[in-house]
Figure 1 (cartoon, rainbow, N blue to C red):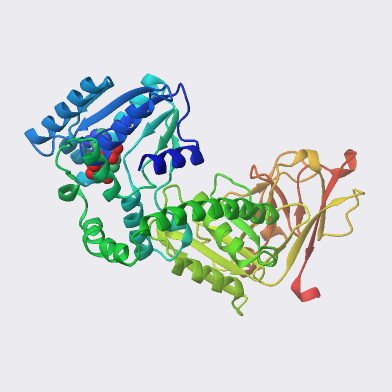
Figure 2 (figure 1 turned 180 degrees about the horizontal axis):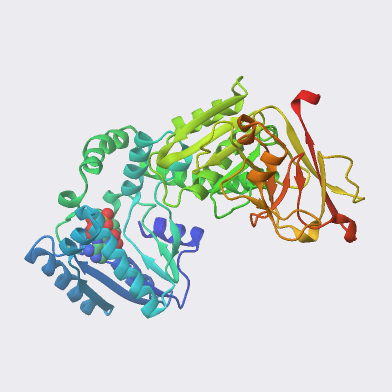
Length: 464
Ligand SMILES: Nc1ncnc2c1ncn2[C@@H]1O[C@H](COP(=O)(O)OP(=O)(O)OP(=O)(O)O)[C@@H](O)[C@H]1O
């Protein structure tokens, strides 16, 4: 066992000389073996070890005895010890969590505090290869998405350092032999009683079957986890390029819009991943309800023959496709035919009636007609927004002092009421109305500036 763990630590560079290492010790076999192993390597790799143990007060006096047992072991092995008792029941009432979830939260809060208190480099935990195999199999049953089936990480950032799991490369059986070999005693493994029902079923029925087929199954699962993680990291980086290409920009409104054509130039794997990156950005809390079926629905929306399609996602998120334009929005556009597009320079925005608008840099400040708008680019906050009217919209009309209600412009120009809710209006990011297309121009007069100018061009479907 020692050799496996040694190579694993080296391969992942989990521990280095002179580091301060916290070890989470419940008193059960896995963490007692881990503590013993780490004590032993102190002979060749000088490290500062501190053992942490949490009494969850869930198993009466037994739990207190576990803590005292760990304390005694630490005294005998010359390891600094910090123990704590937490009140899981009060925390459960406060947070509405289940027992295991609340216990876990409190345990990690304590670990985090200790990481800062000791300015530790890492916290070592006793998860092993069988835990890994169970976790991956459970994830596979739950999800069809590779990114949701990655298992337990060998290391991850935590507080001021990292969490490391040096035993992921070995099986529970190897840990038991190690305990025997070194004549080590552990408290009765409380995990069987505490572990959730599903995990126990995998532990007792599925894992033995897999190990019977291949005793090295846990090694395969560990290799799988490492491989999937590195591949996912690569795909995620590549998918960020998709977001760049479609001019994805974060904004307070949590509103995302891009061209379907551009999005679809990328391979399917990147489209899928980019879709999840967008969802991660839109959903403040990770949404457990999103499954690969949602992913399929989105992929179908991209390829649907119909020009206007929409999907309703959890928490009121609406995804629509209007011709080439894909929109993710929580603010459902209330009025029929209403829209809200972001417009970057070099983009074309399509409207539900088939008309469109181009945005480009211009060499001149000349405006050919009512359907061209030029402004000094220094006076606008990008990206521009092309949307339908909102209550209270006003425009600072060029050459006039003060502003005018957009509603009055529609009335003055005798625009029929049925057209007003779908009439395009351009604003900048700060909400300043720049142009009521075809009717009134606002903002600074481009004739007074030296550019560079931004030129907008509106083309009505009926004219083509
Ligand atoms: N009460 C606790 N105090 C300190 N560390 C804990 C505690 N409970 C769990 N841990 C840490 O989390 C790891 C995984 O926890 P889990 O509940 O899966 O295992 P366990 O059966 O308690 O493990 P072990 O056999 O090491 O006691 C443990 O190996 C240990 O490092």
